[in-house]
Image 1 (tube, helix red, strand yellow):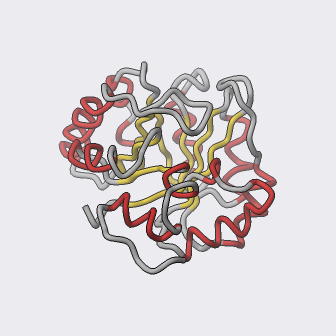
Image 2 (spheres, helix red, strand yellow; image 1 turned 45 degrees about the vertical axis):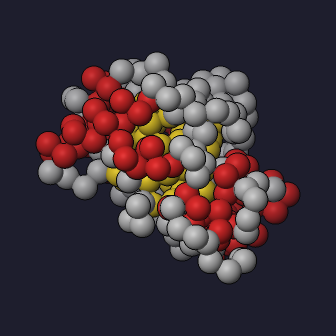
Image 3 (cartoon, one colour; image 1 turned 180 degrees about the vertical axis):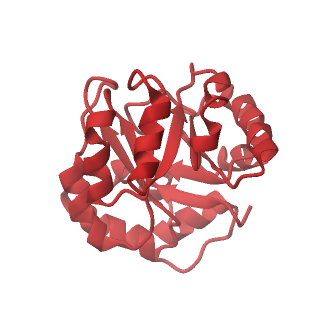
Amino acid sequence: MSDVLISPSILSADFAALGRAVADVDAAGADLIHVDVMDGHYVPNITIGPAVVKALRPHSAKPFDVHLMIAPADPFIDAFVDAGADYLSIHPDAGPHPHRSLQAIRDRGAKPGLVLNPGTPVQVVEPLIDLLDLILVMSVNPGFGGQSFIDSQLSKIETLRAMIDRTGRDIVLEVDGGVNPQTAPRCIAAGATALVAGSAVFKGAGSLSQNIDALRGGVGRAAA
């Protein structure tokens, strides 16, 4: 379990002090910084745009794991890559040509990711997998933090794990939604290699570093 990547979602951080929050989770042991971008159209919430990502970029050298919950996504690819996104993930239904969208992300030098909502079948990955560096399984319906984990997504993770292994490529298999110290081991057992957690990191019982270690199955380091 120690090899799993932890990507704290700043959606659960204090929006009045986002720069400090990013720096703090970096120091506490985060592997990635997860940025949820919502447009109030594809999902029923509005969060942040490229200008905020650019403002946060100097606060951490860790990869920015940017999840676009927007439609259409194509007009904003350049802006988010320019702002500092390292991984840029889209939903397959966020535009008419996901293959072209993923190509555009890679052409700009970022790592393309594909996001599967709870109701999205794994079959959509098959024609796109050669373009992917990351697959994100949503274990809640996207749009809001603090939701409960949907157990049926574990079988989807298992199927995707086998699909990735057949390619022989090092594709990150990430899970987002209701991830906490109780559900994290189940995700990892199913084949996940990265975990997104917002509430469990920023609002957990321990320090940031202890909360991150708890997701990895560790005992927690000294308070951060």
